[in-house]
Length: 363
Image 1 (cartoon, rainbow, N blue to C red):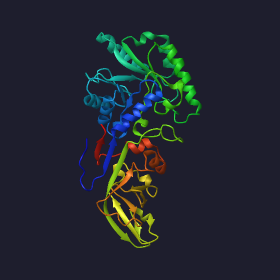
Image 2 (image 1 turned 60 degrees about the vertical axis):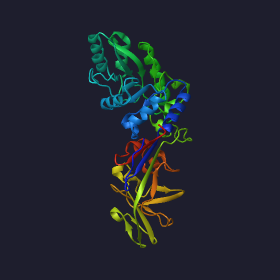
Image 3 (image 1 turned 180 degrees about the vertical axis):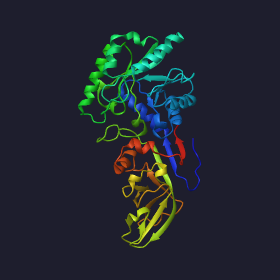
Image 4 (image 1 turned 90 degrees about the vertical axis):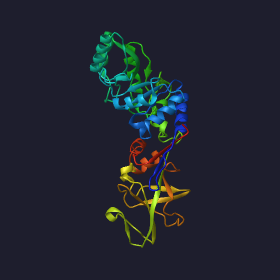
């Protein structure tokens, strides 16, 4: 699949084969099934094409954040795979899409149990137990109530009991072991059901964090699930943006809003069609670079809404119409850009905008 760009449009290329390879590698590491987490439009890369590629490779479980994402994904994938909605939804809101709600409170449990009993057929659902994240999920008191009265689940077909790790990307953090211990204790009190605990980084924490279904997200898309260690995942995304103009400025001339950068020598400046409206973060002002072949072109001046400016003085062959790589070259992974911008790779990917021509390869 591909889109034909016009001359002034940046191109975002997504390697679907690399995403599938990452999914398979995570499954081999986990030693049990792994789902595909495709919330936030597949972490900014396109939930429908990503999920189709994973489904074709054998992935039968998907997770999204909101009901709207689930409905869109069901339309893209058809009736086959399980699609679970992490934020849950009210009974009937999914119409006949056969989405799976994640139940995050006893109120959720009660509503879906009533609906299942009224309909004469248990409603498939997942149960989320909070073990230390303190966002969604049943808290300790709710687990106590449910553990004491399994009848509260009458009307629900419990597919999995899940929890979410808060510090899995910090292997030595004591909360990891504490969450595993709390989850084991909670599951021991609940009706027997398959378990789901590990996210991307959790898959690398060891056997205690293996379960019936892991839920990797970021690692599928090439973000390093083992910070501080070599990245075991393949890179999947590349962003190439066009040079619109090249100009020469004298020493002492300034570039961009706020005149924040001043040339120390006669300088050639390439203006590139990429800005924070495209998700290229303003925090990269004066911190980033783009690549042209093996050349690294420093970003000078501020990132503006639609444009960035690069110092190409030492690379006179660069001309208008050329394309430079802003993401996906050596030193320009999502994690690399995140480090320069003071954020995380998740934000780099999920910020990618809608103005790019998108190309999908290897699907």
